[in-house]
Amino acid sequence: MKWIHDYQLFLFDFDGLLVNTEEIHFKAYQRMITHRGFKLDWSFDKYCQNAHYSSELLREQIFLSLPKLKASEPDWEILYAEKRAAMIDLVNEGQVHLMPGIEKLLQQLEKAEIERCVVTHSPDLLISIVRNQNPILNTIPFWITREHYNHPKPHPECYLKAIHLHALEHDKVIGFEDTPRGMTALMQTRAKPVMVCETTYVEIPEFEKQGALRFKTFEEVNSKMDKST
Image (cartoon, rainbow, N blue to C red; front, side, top):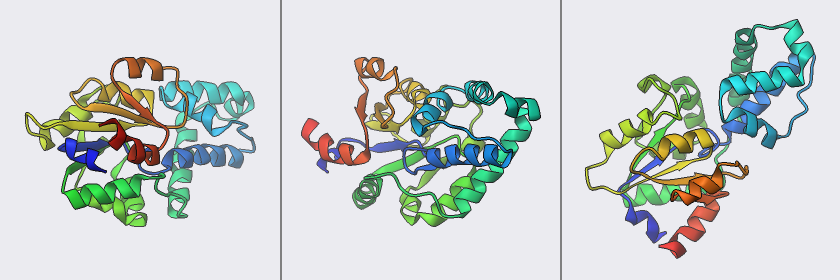
């Protein structure tokens, strides 16, 4: 993995990139809906296509798929609070695990003493639980969470803050994201943008035209980046 030495700062999203919490978010919605007496008959890919653009789109599509759910409880805030509680339960049940290939990369970055930072909209409480369950995440020294900035992705504020705090002027920076919203934020910075996801978003060809790299897993990143540098 000689390629990691080409960069002085690594930036990582969290949900769905380092850990499978995107799957847990999906399961939490399903659990909330099941407890309400309904069933969300979606694939995980369909969930991603709806969830990774805006919370409004996800809400609209769930209500469109389940009009009786909306009739029984039209207040989305109440439903979302139930989903958050289900999410914490699932995390506490130990269902979160590292995404394929990420442990090897984090081990190599720690060994090489290359700066690295997580940039996420997830709250500190969730992150604390997941880090306790997956100790390799504690090798990442810097964490920028939703409590540390004002404007969520696709606004670039969180990534610009990470670069300002942890990179020198001439340092080369690389960032990893798994959603179009996150990539849009990342690509408004000087970081080399890399998308790591299995979902085939319609924006991916345009991201690649603008210089982004795309891999399906970090196993691919680990095996192919040395060959391309």
